[in-house]
Image 1 (cartoon, rainbow, N blue to C red):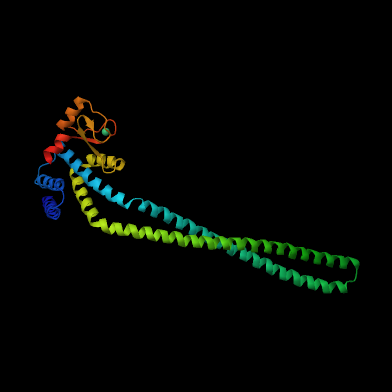
Image 2 (cartoon, rainbow, N blue to C red; image 1 turned 180 degrees about the vertical axis):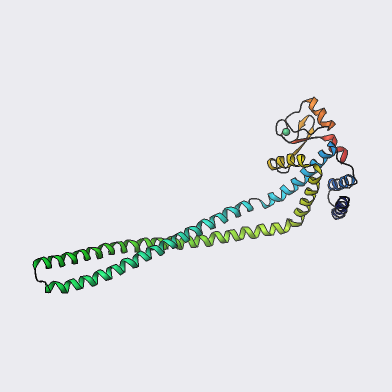
Length: 283
Ligand SMILES: [Zn+2]
């Protein structure tokens, strides 16, 4: 345990050196870490300061997300589109194959029927009775009906196949277009990711470090609020108002918030409330 603390402390020192030239409030954050890792367990006002620092970090992370804008969402939509189009193409291809099989079977059946018709045609000259002749003529008729019916269906299949082939070609063109758009968006996002990667990793590491100090229950509270108010989970109490929703806070509650013996959330917006004096004392 001691080793872990020590390690964290070293890390803090390292990042402290790295971010020396960054804004002042950040270096205050690190100073605070060093102090707390020397064995002082955070009291509630320290917890509130941690929350305040988390909010700053999440605010910066949110800014990065805003620069990335709707690219991640757009990429997701385009990926879904590509999947849909490619599904349709494969469904079409299966249907076309089935139709081709049917067409072939009907064609084979027609060849057989025509062969039979030829045979019957020869037989009809060798009949020995009118009944035999009638039977042969009936058989020829039924073969003829089969051929006619099949030809009609073959014609129908050819039309459907033609339409489906056109549709498939259109889908393939569309697929190419969407894929190209997807690729361009992915490229843009990758570039932004590379640009912000280092910053994001640093912020996330700092975030994890602070979160490890606030305790499970507080972590849950903070994460829940940060999920709703990205980068604005805490609000400052200034002139009796919540800086998040600008609703007024009863004077008695304001005093309680200032004394920081409990963690209070805004009755209107739910944000964690921090008295301005607490932050001023730190910075
Ligand atoms: Zn509020």
